[in-house]
Amino acid sequence: MKHILLLVLGLILGGCASDGSTKPHASAKVVNPNATTVWRLTFDKRLEQNDFAAPIVNVDFGDETLPFLVDTAATSHVIDQWAAKLTGLPVENDRLTTAFEIDDDKMPAAGFTVAKLNSRYEDSGVAGSLSPQLLMGDKAIALDFLNSKFHRGDFDALMADRNAEVVTAETGKICPEQGPAKTNLYVLTVKIDNIPLKLLVDSNAEETAVIAGHAAAMKLSKEGKSNFSRLHKGKVTVGGKTVTRMVDILDMPNLPCGVEGVLGMDVLKLCTLVIDQKRMGLRCNND
Image (cartoon, rainbow, N blue to C red; front, side, top):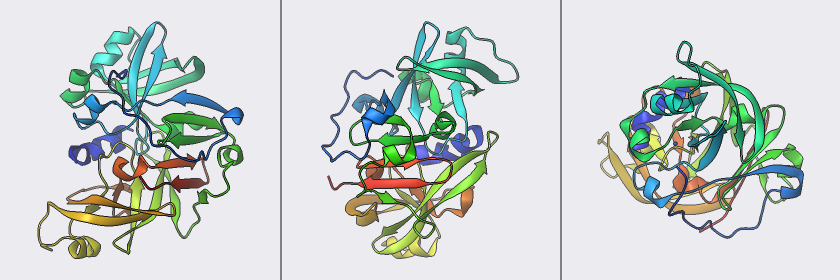
């Protein structure tokens, strides 16, 4: 919930090796690992308790390894000031540009926005956030939250399980060229208690939330007046599955793409998300 208050910063600017990671949910695989590059995602209970909902991937800058959040709502790579200093790399105009590695896979040079993030980043040893969209290049990526894997490869290979839902114009869309890096963002039409809402796919949000004051939020809120309330046992339908979740109703100014809220990790942790520059696929399993 606290992440929502930092969402606008993450959108404008564009996160710790686990010693207590949670076990992934069992699921039928959507991706074909033989056809892709596979990186390991980590979910750390200690970090989750400190409001870091997003999965973490380790990034190597030369001899220095730093943990970054994988944030689907980030429009650029962001590195905290303390982590930028630790790399020893030059920073020019609040920009650190360098090649790097993920799980021994060499990535081409990319720019990281250097910013002073919330103190909880440095306190928890989280270096910043990565935009998965900027990692895909001309390929697709799959965020397999169920099995704690991050894949990069051909979209059709990543969608090897044809039971996965390929999102159409009616159920979701790509919101193009957001932020300074002109990054695509992804929007899904999600039903909450059978009310359709366009939600930003946000892996760095702890919980699914709807904008306060929206007509649907007024229906969802028991009070119908509060700017900060929560619907208990809201039924969220996405990716062919329905799950019961706590849905926040919050003031969220300046959300991009005309969205009506965010789809957070409380739901996404049950899913595999496959995206490229033009398409999005989704498969979710009940917990």
